[in-house]
Image (cartoon, rainbow, N blue to C red; front, side):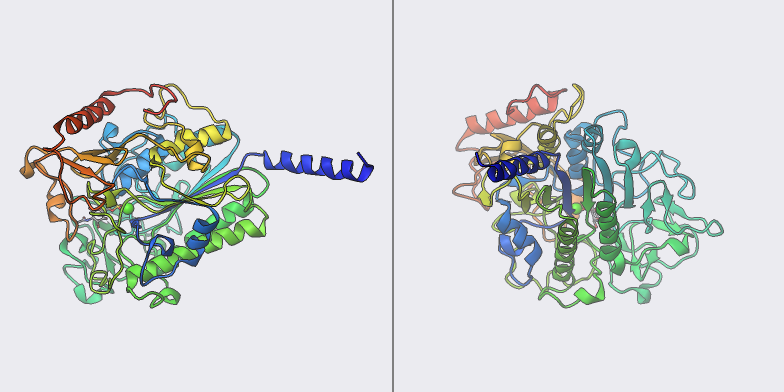
Length: 510
Ligand code: NG6
Ligand code: CA
């Protein structure tokens, strides 16, 4: 071999070694984004060029799911590899204690042990502190106790108090002279509420969202004090993106894991003025445009530091779409032909398919070839799959429901799960290939009140068991439970087995 080629050969080898370094990992988690809400998934009335480019150059999944049709349960499963029902995880009030057990393994803790710097930026909604949390003192346990090195969070949701950011252990910009207090038991202080002063509101709200007014928006729950720390909804995207970018910049020389958990497109939808009117669908569409901008900024940051090729970016959502979720933002009136759930029935909260089937894109230029994958996948498996990718360790007691489907997540295989659990607010459902079974709920009176109140979404719960064949009937119209009683019985039994199972039986497909 001539000397020159030898030289280039060894450079290539060095390069390959460089590539073999652990990838950076970014999970971008949109809130309430439906299967049909991106251009690449058929959106009408809104453009999402940054995400469409990721989908075009990465893997666009057509049958990937969050574990549950609401936020807290899905986030819980993503970070713990455990189904939410095992810990009775439901949508949490803004003053709930930390839901994740700091003594158990988590996705970020596993990555930290594998040599990663870890951060969460954005919506948390997994509880903070203990029962009697004082927001003026150190707020713990929280993200830092469950594996994150850095956190900058919206504690619960945009529509719940407290309406302040928490960075690591402290409320950002809080003044000692004006302590903050939070209550979900009843009014505190003498500040205006949506009910007492609707004339102060930027967006009218339903009675459940008509408590303390912060930044001209009434919220769920009461808070008083802490004025210097109050957030402005219009600045969410800029502030969170800036925090995510500085985390990337500060960790450009070492492997990092960033859980970038968007506020968008959850209610209240109050995008920055530069995004107002950028879609044809009013605030909900404009929030999608804003969200796409955040993704563009993150990808730009990666480019700036030449990190794009060895960064695994996973973009997805925590539950299906909702239009009217309590605020008069005209999302129903301005919808036009757009189908937030794509071809699927239901949406946020629902046991029907649109509850958990969400846009899911994997982008990793170094390792992943562009394709569309129909593999059946669940976010509960990201823990074990990412562990497999980075050679991370999972304790015997940890991540009981998480399995290694890294080959499918990285597009090397089109075979995902054979069966997959779907959680929703009032029941459990199971996919077995193209079959979908929704377990009956014995007594309609036992549904949580707010399930019955859900506006315009078919929650999918019934006193009858439901069985659908999604190949012929993607919109879950024809219940085949009576026609195929054996199949229905088997799928019911599989749900029961999963419920009874205590620890991860192995690394095989379940
Ligand atoms: C519901 C809220 C809804 C939203 C949801 C949580 C009412 C009537 N509705 O309870 O506005 O905040 O909780 O959304 O209170 S999630 O995306 O965080 O799951
Ligand atoms: Ca959500």
